[in-house]
Length: 136
Length: 258
Image (cartoon, rainbow over all chains, first blue to last red; front, side, top):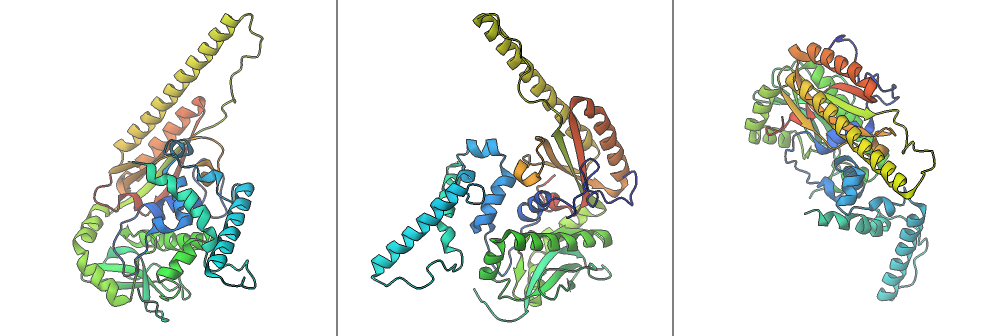
């Protein structure tokens, strides 16, 4: 490089304004999640099973136009990007919970809004993940 | 699947040459933030002790569903590999490669010796550089403001505008292809990725090129000069180039890459 003492990432690249976090999160995730040698670990975790990652990875691996081509329209149902869809997801969750309780013939538990390991995200997950199966 | 309450797990960042003097001097993942070298034969894994409760399958799942925690893990992973790159050659591992203990890491080094040793040989004396091209300062939409005299006139103008847009698009494509071709000449490897989505890149300007180059230390200076020269030449066309690096060679860790 013309000046080896310059770390371009810390200055956000030659052209880009400096970022307080050093390199951009997009650049970082693109590399650590999608690149790097894949060696089997003792702990088996499929990154594509992680809902957040499938969402973000889609951002990384597919531009919006490409995603639309593939029939991926998660941004229309992602509650963080679409408040209305978020309400629908919440409504969906409550209805599913009621249905579960009715089916089991159980009394409603106190604190029905309790978060218990992310199951409330399931409706969004299904809505968002399904179209990805069409990318054959 | 075991979920033991110990710090016996090991998160592996990457693999270095076995004769490296010491571990990358920085904070890692996990509570202790300690980074250690686990040596086996001519290889050394840069690793951190982690609890298998937080870094077991369930714990990792929970962490990865939280963008703040994911970002913290990603930045710690990158920080260690970045330091590793300063002290030697490193084969970066994908995030979340976790072993049940130091013995598990040694078993992995034994089992994967051939591809890891080959990658170290291939990557010695190189680093990865990222180059992106953005389209900047392009006016939005057409500029036909005068009222059309007739329907035929209107259609003709629309056709002209469409042809002009198509020509401009082809010129930009050719310019970006030329950038890639020139940089590739100075690189030992090149990988093109899809342009990043604007919500991830945080930039409104459309990204037209998202490339990674594996550049030898000997060629780094000339690569930088070519980049700077290309950048100057493209500003008139409304293209802006961005260079990031040196990165650990993430895009070139697998034998097929480049």
